[in-house]
Length: 186
Image 1 (cartoon, one colour):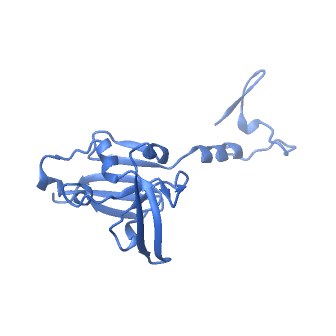
Image 2 (image 1 turned 135 degrees about the horizontal axis):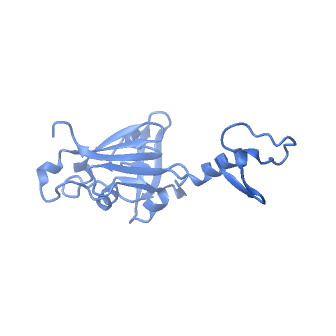
């Protein structure tokens, strides 16, 4: 509940008279102005979790503070056909390295048993193997893009970009979580 100061004390916002409402009535729940303000203040964040020394939640703005790469991609979208876009953002490798992956980077074969599960705001998920992003193996420039075609993704959230994929199914929009962990049986 939000409170407002009055001359004689603190008044719950729900009891304040709303502009244009002669009765001052406000239905139960958050004040409409508070809901709108909260919506504007909330920025999408990516939760980095799993086998990490420093799990974190990062906004697009914080991701933008990491070294960025630019990729031009073409991929097939089942619903919209061929897509051509330019993306900017940090490599997934750099984001995870900053979070301290609990992966023995001196041993090659054990690294191959780790996976990344990337989840979007709409529930769409994609899996990326550690070997795809590790420079000793695939070294792909997979990004957590902070902009698409020059437009910032602050409101929508970052996008997983997998430049080597011909199909756009692993291009996860509005990424909300990246989990790092061992594959089953690894």
